[in-house]
Amino acid sequence: MPKCQISGKRRRTGNNVSHANNKTKRVFGANIQKVRVVDENGTKKRMYVSTRVLRNGEVTKAAPRKVLLEIAEQEKQNQQ
Image (cartoon, rainbow, N blue to C red; front, side, top):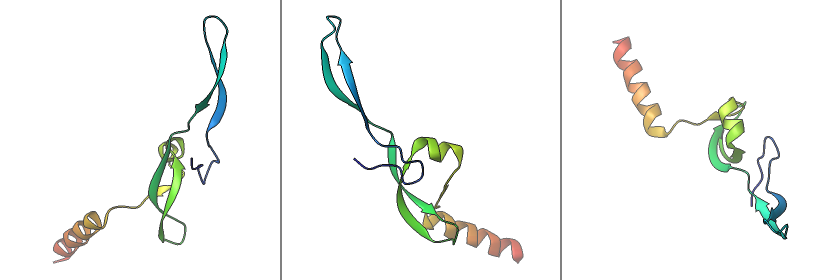
């Protein structure tokens, strides 16, 4: 299981506790996503990031190439 490369979150262990107080081991998994991210230098790379980090805006997701091309075309039309 991967861990978040920003916050360090990873899976945690604990116990399932039944009504009869029987305890068995279980795993609490963190919600980790593999995301394309733009770093400080403007380069794109894939990272394992928790959803909490994504929601708080601590990293910037890279836009798909198709979207970037559409934006470039719109800017060309606006300049003409």
